[in-house]
Amino acid sequence: YQPHTKLTITNEDLRFILPSIITLLTIISTNNINIMFSTKAFIALLSISVAQGFAPVARPQMNSALGYSIKIVSEEHDLDTTIDVPEGTYLVDAAEEAGLDLPYSCRAGSCSTCAGKAVSGTWNQEEQSFLDEDQIGEGFVLTCVASPTSDGEITVHMEDELY
Image 1 (cartoon, helix red, strand yellow):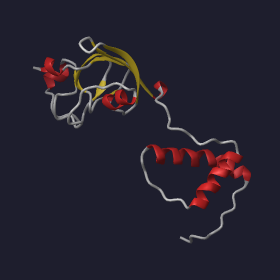
Image 2: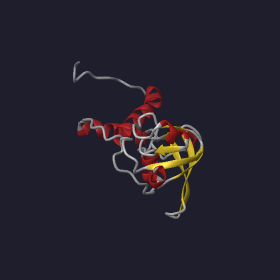
Image 3: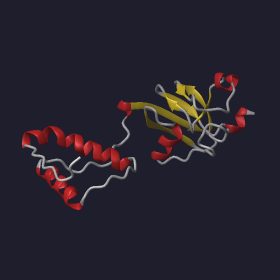
Image 4: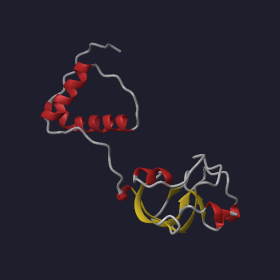
């Protein structure tokens, strides 16, 4: 590694690599990863991106094209809304991102506070350790460690129904 090695990048090269650099910086910033740039390097990167017509990228929004549409219902809590849940994202996290407050306690799948009951759709909740096979067979889902694997509907605030 030589910290002062000069690298020459043509405008043609820049058109191909700049979107990747911006995407990388977006990933770094949205995942709270710390990376060190000198002020001079950061200003140069920003100047180049603006000169080439690339604006700084905001945090990506959830997109149902990359996930699933989930209807969340609770008569008791006057809740009937549909949200997009990115693939691999736990329902509690996606709901929180959408401004909904779903119950949770451990966020580890080891209690029943976040229990919901699937009306339709399929769920991956392999990280849960609380529900038994019968409860899973009845459709119960621990929303703190459950991510949808299809579009569906779920009734939330169902902890009391488990017992």
